[in-house]
Image (tube, rainbow, N blue to C red; front, side, top):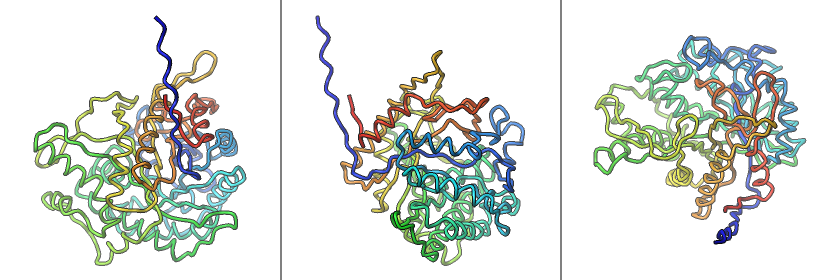
Length: 461
């Protein structure tokens, strides 16, 4: 009997001008952590503490991007990237968090941005991707209001020096993870383990965002002649929350977890207040909210877009009355980090964002770690990653069809890199990095993504 004929491929086209990109962050790729006046960050300090990072790894040399950036920009151009989201290392610009400015750090980013423009790649700059200057941490870090004020100064400096060359600015990357994994918990730097600081940290991160947006407006940044008007926004890592069972107690747990991880950040940004159920949760645990009278109006200063980092959903079950809901593993297939693969998280996260704002949206991170191993001929056939990206992009297209104003998509990540407390074992990159030699080798997913960009869409089997 003959095999059935394959079904024809179905094209999914994205809007004209859709911004196809890839993302990285400074500490994860740059290396050169003491070069040319860079100061110490909380991640430098965290990596030196025994047991904090898998294998005792650190951000040195990471991908050596600080020295190899011309090679990396040329690689982006060969893949046809329309945009590149990177972060600026605050300790490289203002080594002590405030005061003296390090010109060598500014010059590095100016050269990088100029090279991106020369290759027709839109720079998308993130002001803060977790690498707080250590001197600020020693004065309280994000639990202290002063850190938000120093951040506003740092942001204003970058708008003044680099603003005309950067069309899209991101203030803070993933305040939720900073709050819970860095301060309430111990998994990420600074590893404070102080749950009573949760609301203070979340509030000061949001306040820093609002102050930076106001500084951006006051700077009256004028773009270069051939660039669009610049805009500014924040990046939230939204995680759709589902109950682990039909039981009412699990439904309540999912609602609580949604309030603590998603709406705690969406509501003040777009409605000017914190969710009542989240505040009630913290009040019962004697967690204070150190808000000044005008803070919420500053936080809600209108931005130009919202960035979404989306990787997973969360299944919530009732937990200990003191600690709150607990997360349980989902039933789906998993990535190398054990994250459930659930493509509808994309359309669900976009729908959640649309409850709060009509601003343009960007998917600023989405990707997966798999056990990528080069074949004997050197090729890396990462079909699992291709399947993952295709399924998640199909969900992004579903959101577009439902009316979402989605303007772009950024794969995490351009390069295999330092993956925070997990060290160098997890590989998220479109491009394989041999960390012993720093050789770059595009994987099959990189070539697949280049084809997606060229056709401005997908061909689904």
